[in-house]
Length: 228
Image (cartoon, rainbow, N blue to C red; front, side, top):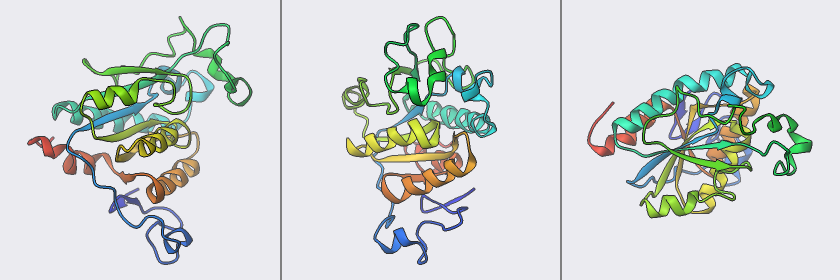
């Protein structure tokens, strides 16, 4: 998978092509300019999704994203970019599961004492910030927006799981709150490669730039004055 101008290009109908109905309708006409104060938002790279022990964490696509995300976050820290991690955890009695109890009841396994809420040790770094959430978006019902504003963050690089679920929801809310986003496509994972690719392509049309970890490290984090 590769990107040109922030657009994923290994799809059957790449965004930005004359034969793409969305492009002809006016979508995906350019990249969103990123600011200077960039942070990384890592969505739900917790053991429940990365250990391979729970049903929701057995996808090879998720496992592949962990390695790329590790490189991304190391690059960010080396260039003094703050890193924010979200994780989900629910009460043992399931009272706060909400509508997940019908759609994804296995999330009830991620409860106090289970250990599934812990950020994967390959991903977490000293000084990283933890954000507890219960819904798909990193912003919904959390203090993330205020924390970003207070920290002077004006743009986000987003990675995590799953691409079609919590990553997409977080990208849409970041867009709605006015935070330009670049999604690291190889540092995101999903249960199915088609869902992953289709959602990346659609986010690139509507809400975000989409680039590889290598390009992000080279083009965005270089602004700090060093290259990893």
